[in-house]
Length: 119
Image (cartoon, rainbow, N blue to C red; front, side, top):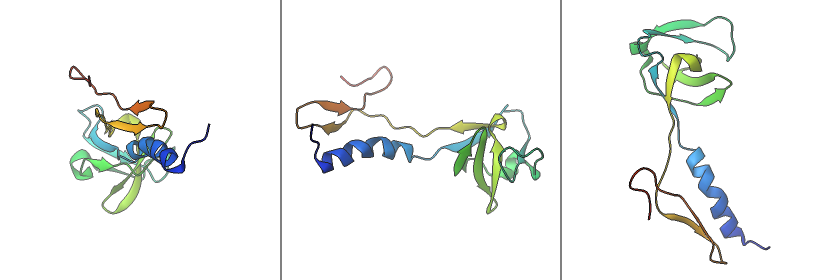
């Protein structure tokens, strides 16, 4: 089966555009937590410093992830937060538009979500 390059790039580009959407740290977990531990490296045994939730400036854009930790910038400096101490909002995309129509007529589409799903 021979696939033309523009079609291949279009097919590959759909998942990557969704993956590039940025996740954010939006709240402490549990919500009663009043401070967050900041780590220099993921997996460190002791925190570099501790700040109040109000000082953190939520929401924080997640720059990277590593098993149980999120890298964020606070006051112009990079730190790692433990995943167990925060709630994360994951960026998602959903819609009813067709993403790709192959030459054979087969369709790859993104289904809608909820009670008003695509018909």
